[in-house]
Image 1: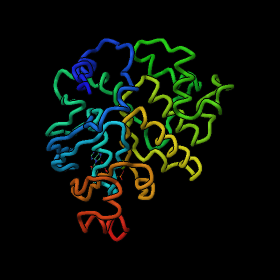
Image 2: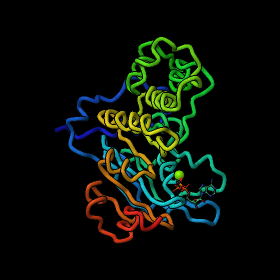
Image 3: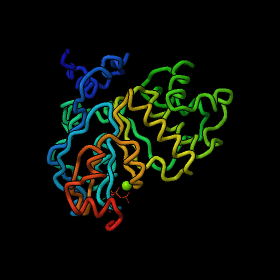
Length: 281
Ligand SMILES: Nc1ncnc2c1ncn2[C@@H]1O[C@H](COP(=O)(O)OP(=O)(O)OP(=O)(O)O)[C@@H](O)[C@H]1O
Ligand SMILES: [Mg+2]
């Protein structure tokens, strides 16, 4: 089996020019598991306060990795390190490394905009722009200077399992959709630029159970093509949809990271067992 060439992806991170074409996905699904994202001794501070403490983790490609832990333990901070959304927070300082395909995303030559093209994000609260459904989807391509075709719009909406519901109303406002549809529109917007990784921070917590279950089904499909890292407060959800689970506990410590079945059925740490059984947190 050929060794994947990571040089290209490094160039895509560094370059400010618009890239064309995508990765050969068919090849990827046949590849053995491989680390795509990794942190090494990652610590994050807001001013004097440390939010993440010396976190080292390897996240595999084309898998769902769930990040769980009590409020304030640093889950969102961790997610924001991956595509450097923390850059936008005053007083936030990152120590250590976060690598994407072996390249430290904090290297000076990395362009955060190019990084975010590869590593898309979906937030807790559906946040479509006050624009048409079509324009919401094409936005991600247009900020890169690419013109989006009808096929691009259809592909992204199909990828987000929303096409059948909106195909006759592409010019209506994205804000007129239901909450669950809005969240799928945000997923369509995130996948339109053809990223490799999708970060989701509690994407279903604002949704009713039916809409949430649609997103869960969708994640199951998305992972065929993308690597998904999802923060959730819902233990059942983490157990249902993820392959790997990372448990952060107070002090921004990554306490356990393993196969999801192991974490939920036979955790190595009693503090983790206490947390997932509801005795703590
Ligand atoms: N913008 C910020 N400025 C200052 N401190 C922050 C900021 N964002 C987060 N923090 C602090 O960093 C720590 C981790 O916060 P973070 O939002 O990453 O936690 P979380 O695990 O996502 O929590 P929740 O489950 O409530 O979303 C907390 O102590 C929080 O107060
Ligand atoms: Mg959070």
